[in-house]
Each structure stands twice: as structure tokens, then as C-alpha cells.
Length: 613
Ligand SMILES: *[C@@H]1O[C@H](CO)[C@@H](O)[C@H](O)[C@H]1NC(C)=O
Ligand SMILES: *[C@@H]1O[C@H](CO)[C@@H](O)[C@H](O)[C@H]1NC(C)=O
Ligand SMILES: *[C@@H]1O[C@H](CO)[C@@H](O)[C@H](O)[C@H]1NC(C)=O
Ligand SMILES: *[C@@H]1O[C@H](CO)[C@@H](O)[C@H](O)[C@H]1NC(C)=O
Ligand SMILES: *[C@@H]1O[C@H](CO)[C@@H](O)[C@H](O)[C@H]1NC(C)=O
Ligand SMILES: *[C@@H]1O[C@H](CO)[C@@H](O)[C@H](O)[C@H]1NC(C)=O
Ligand SMILES: *[C@@H]1O[C@H](CO)[C@@H](O)[C@H](O)[C@H]1NC(C)=O
Ligand SMILES: *[C@@H]1O[C@H](CO)[C@@H](O)[C@H](O)[C@H]1NC(C)=O
Ligand SMILES: *[C@@H]1O[C@H](CO)[C@@H](O)[C@H](O)[C@H]1NC(C)=O
Ligand SMILES: *[C@@H]1O[C@H](CO)[C@@H](O)[C@H](O)[C@H]1NC(C)=O
Ligand SMILES: *[C@@H]1O[C@H](CO)[C@@H](O)[C@H](O)[C@H]1NC(C)=O
Ligand SMILES: *[C@@H]1O[C@H](CO)[C@@H](O)[C@H](O)[C@H]1NC(C)=O
Image (cartoon, rainbow, N blue to C red):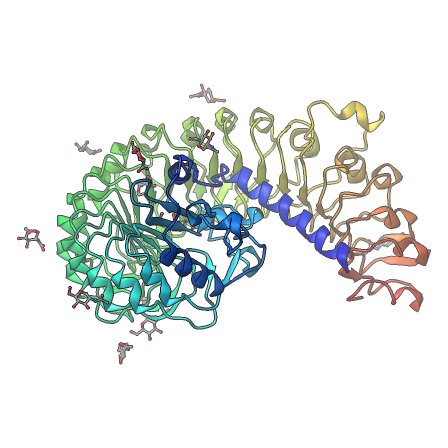
């Protein structure tokens, strides 16, 4: 059905918009820099042999969105130097740059495809790829003057290997074959790419077999081997001989053993990512020589050691990730020296929350992740003094007691996750001060004594997009005495995702939510005590894509408003006392993919609606 796709696309667009906003919107590194070559007045027509090579190369691609429409044999397309993604030298006319990477990605998917700082990678859907690769034509070898080759995000997922002949493009300075789904070995012909400065082979399914040619690429400043399988071996010593490296990523390479001492020679390194291997902590101190480091990621390594002291001496660090390292014991107080630090992720370790009084010194922090790292204590008051924080994650820390009122100082905060603790705040008076908040998750804490929570959360947070208060023992909010619109003081117009499932809410919650129905995309009120629908709420629900009202003891007939939920994709009314409905009300739900009505008192007549009743 045509409507389906549009609906889903809308939902994805909203989701992506949301993710971008919450993560600080790192969308689209600017490619106009590379396009500046094209802007130069190209008078030389391209070289015929190279034009033929490019056409052969195009025949090896499935160009689903016709993005290479400028590439062709027609008279007006003779000058291949004007083709999209092709750049020629304005002196010799030779093709020097071929860039079919990121800028060709379906724009909906042009979001940061790498790991964001605190979230796991957003998996690319195959639909996001502009090109499906069938083969890389060997005629590409004609482009002998090529300096820059970016084929990243061309999907060669049919078992292609990296062709040998790439190694004879010896003028290459930049080679990006990331996210191409290549399998097999890296050709040893790469030994000849001695001019190479940037080599990105990340996110393929490559095997590392004898990479002893790598030291020949002594000009490398950037090397990314993420996800290449080194089969549990040690990091080869020779990587430490690439002393011009500024960026090195060996993420998820299946390395074990210690870091080689040769790493102490990588003194130019600014960005080092060794995350998600099985590295041992023995030789970690060799990293203490890397005083230029601004970004260090050691997440997912080291089993059961203490955080080494020397990390606090890397005073240029801006981003430090030590997530899931099974680190035990205290965080060294030397961390108080890391005054440049903007992002700190220590989540999922077994740290002691004591002696954190160096933390206020990190006044530049914008992102702090300590989820799953502590075991039982109160939230330290001084976290509220980190007034530049935008993203604070304290999930599953076994925190007890109140939330410090100093949190009211965190006026820049966009994302606050305090879920799965044992917090029991008496009020949320500090919350309305967080006027930048977009995503709030207090799930799995006890809010049973906070009756005025909708006043603090719904009415006072103008930028809130996502609210998650699952399993909080939320009491029924008071029924507003006057018309609900009078209660709309400062309320959000962007609230789109609300999950209040597993609480003690009654239908008065509908009155509080009725200010938001034009923006709500997903609402989960399952497992509460709603008992009845509410006409104020149901007047306009055309924006809803997901609605879950299951397990609520709802009685009566399904109201006709259901028929106005023209965008709804998933509707769950199961486990209620509903007796029936006007079947016509379902007829207009063209986007519906999932409808659950089980365990009600319905007759069978509705079963023909929806796809997975
Ligand atoms: C991209 O670069 C161009 C030219 O340098 C500039 O005009 C434009 O604002 C930039 N766009 C973004 C999103 O940074
Ligand atoms: C193009 O040619 C002009 C001189 O004709 C030169 O100044 C310029 O740097 C050249 N641009 C590139 C990108 O090679
Ligand atoms: C290679 O391409 C990917 C995806 O387009 C991009 O994220 C990455 O930054 C590129 N690598 C380099 C070194 O520019
Ligand atoms: C690499 O260079 C060597 C020596 O210059 C040459 O013999 C070899 O054929 C080259 N390999 C490739 C794949 O071009
Ligand atoms: C991977 O390592 C195992 C031993 O750990 C070895 O038996 C196997 O041959 C190695 N596989 C490859 C492809 O090197
Ligand atoms: C890592 O290498 C070992 C061999 O040492 C192998 O058994 C294992 O499957 C590899 N793990 C991954 C995730 O590739
Ligand atoms: C560091 O480089 C120097 C000079 O090239 C070399 O002598 C030394 O062995 C290297 N250190 C390590 C640990 O490899
Ligand atoms: C290399 O690392 C630096 C420092 O972290 C970073 O600013 C830069 O974007 C990285 N380069 C690329 C091509 O990703
Ligand atoms: C980590 O250490 C624990 C206890 O020292 C051990 O039981 C476990 O197997 C280790 N895990 C790994 C992945 O080495
Ligand atoms: C770092 O902090 C420690 C203890 O907090 C202090 O003794 C040391 O001098 C500091 N080092 C640097 C390089 O600032
Ligand atoms: C933070 O809030 C507390 C209590 O609300 C207040 O006393 C303190 O001065 C504030 N600190 C900063 C740095 O704003
Ligand atoms: C459901 O509602 C009926 C009355 O409408 C009430 O008697 C019954 O106790 C409710 N059941 C639950 C589980 O709340």
C-alpha cells in the first residue's frame, strides 16, 4: 500500500529529527570544501580514456535514485569533469578526485552513522544506501592521477572483495572504502600506496592476513581499521612505526593481549580508538607519552583492573570513553586535571562513588555518562555545579534518596536519564528550571508522593520531545478544575514520545495530555487504570503513529475517534473490557500495520481490519 511507506517515512523522519536534536545534531559534515575544486572554471574537457573508465565504473553500480544522471554518453554530458562527484585537475584535465561517499546517501539517512558519544551506533538500513555495488570495474585503473577516492557507503554486500588493482592507483592520498560490506583480505598491493595519508576501511567484513606492508604507508595520518577481524591476535608492533598518525581507530578488531610498547612513539596522535577488543591492562602506561591526545576511547576492554592514574595527565583530552571496562575501585583524583574534557563516559564499570570531589573541576563537561557504574549511594550534590552539561546519564546506579535540588542549576541540560535507580524524590521543584530539556527518563524510580508531577514535567518544559516515566508508581494527577487550556502555562509544543506505562494513572491524565495531541507521535499508557476514554483528548489524534492503551480496564465501545487517527501504524487496545465498535471507524486507517484487540468483550466482526489482528 502506498500510504504505508509515506507514513513510515514520516515516522522515521521525525525519529531522526529527534535523534539529531538530542545528540546535538551532528549531521552532514560539509562537503562544499571538496566541491570547491569543481567550482574552479574547468575549460579542459576530460580525457576520453578516463571518461570511458568512469562509464565502465558506473555500469558496475545500481544507481537506484539516478544520482549519477550527469554521467552519460550524450553530447551535453561529454565533459566528465562536470559529472557529479568527479573532479579534474584544472591544469592537466586528469580526474584527480572521485567522491561517491556520504554526500550521495539518501538525505534522510545523512545522520552521524558512527557511534555517537553515549549511544550505540545507529545501524544503517540498506535503503539508506544510494548505490548498490555489483563490481568495481578494473577500468578504474585508467584513473592513474586519482588522488582522492571515496567509495564509502556503496553497498557491495554480494560478497565482493577489495580488488587488487586499487593498489596501483599510486597517487592516492585519500582512500575511503568504509561501510562497503567488502569481505576477505586487504590486498597486499596496498603496499604501493605510499602517498596515502587517509585510509579508512572501517565497517566491512575484512580479514586481517599479514598486514606487514602497512609500515610502507609511512605518510598515513589517518588509519581506521574498525571491525577488521584480527582473530584474537595482539596489536602488531609495526603500527607504532606509523609515527605521523593523528587518528587511529582499531575499534572492534578482535585484538587481545596488551597494547604494544611501540605505541609510545605515536606522539602525534590526537584521536585513538581501541574500543571493543579484549585488550589486557598490563602495558597501558605506554599511552602516557601521547600528550597530544584529544580523543581516547578504550571502552570494552580490560577485565577487572583499576583506572590507571596516568589518564589524568593527558590534559588535552576533550573526549574520553572508558565504557564497559569492568574497571573497579575509585576514579583517580588526577582526573581533576582534565579541565578541557567535554565528554566523559565511564558507564558500566564497578566504580566507587566516593571521592568524586575533583568532578566540579571539569567545568567544560557537556556530556557525562556514569550509568551502571556505582552501587548504592546518594547522587552527589556537586553534579549540579557542572552547569555546562547537556547530556547526563545516571541510569542503573542504585542511587537512593532524593534528587539534589542543585540539579536546578543544569539549565543547559537537554538529555537527563536517571532511570532504574531507587530514587524517591519528594518533589520535582528543581525540574522546571531545566528549560532546555528535550529528553527526560525517570523510569523505575518511586514518584508515588509527587502528585503534581504533570505541573512540573508537562507544563513547564517547553522543549521536551520525549518523556519516559515507566514503572514510577505515578499517582493519578489531580483533575484540573478549569478548562485544561488554562493550565497550559509554558508547555511544550514539541512533545512527541510519551511512555507512562506501568503506573497508577486514571483518565485524568488525558486532560493533562490533551494539550499535546497535535504533536504526539507515540503514546504508551498501558497497564494503568484509565477506565474510560476522554473526549477532550480524543478530539484530534491525527499525528499519532503508535498508541498503546492495553491493560487499562477500559469499558464501553471503542469510540469513533479511532477513525480519525489517519497516521496510526500500531494500535493496542488489548486486555480491556471493551464491548464493541463501529467497524467503519477502522476503515480509514490506511497505515495500520498492527491492531491488537485481544481479551476484550468484542464480537468477531473487526478481525478483517489491519494486517496482524
Ligand atoms: C558549508 O560550507 C559553505 C562554504 O564554505 C558555507 O557557506 C555553508 O554555510 C556550510 N554549511 C554548513 C552546514 O556548515
Ligand atoms: C586552477 O588553476 C589556477 C590557475 O589557472 C590555480 O591558481 C588554481 O590553484 C587551480 N586550482 C586547482 C584546484 O588546482
Ligand atoms: C569515510 O566515509 C565515512 C562515511 O561516508 C565517513 O563517515 C568518514 O568520516 C570518512 N573517513 C574519512 C577519513 O574521511
Ligand atoms: C607494486 O610496486 C611494485 C614495485 O614498484 C611492483 O613490482 C608491483 O607490480 C606493484 N604492484 C601493483 C599491484 O601495482
Ligand atoms: C585464528 O586463531 C586460531 C587460534 O586462536 C587459529 O587456530 C586459526 O587458524 C586462526 N584463523 C586464522 C584465519 O588465522
Ligand atoms: C575472535 O578471534 C577468535 C580466535 O582467536 C575467534 O574464535 C572469535 O570468533 C573471534 N571473534 C569475533 C567476534 O570475530
Ligand atoms: C620508538 O622509536 C625509536 C626510534 O625510531 C625506536 O628506536 C624505538 O625502538 C621505538 N620504541 C618502541 C617501543 O618501539
Ligand atoms: C581526527 O581526529 C581529530 C581529533 O579528534 C578530529 O577533530 C578529526 O575530525 C578527525 N579526523 C577525521 C577525518 O575524522
Ligand atoms: C573477567 O574476569 C573474571 C574474573 O576475574 C573471569 O571470570 C571472566 O572470565 C573474565 N572475562 C573475560 C572476558 O576475560
Ligand atoms: C594532577 O592532579 C594530581 C592530583 O590531583 C596532582 O598531584 C598533579 O600535580 C596534577 N598533574 C598535572 C599534570 O596537572
Ligand atoms: C546551585 O544550586 C544551589 C541550590 O539550588 C545553589 O545554592 C547554588 O548556588 C547553585 N550553584 C551554582 C554553581 O549555580
Ligand atoms: C474494572 O472496572 C470495574 C468497574 O468498572 C471494577 O469493578 C473492577 O474492579 C475494575 N478492575 C480492575 C482490575 O481494576
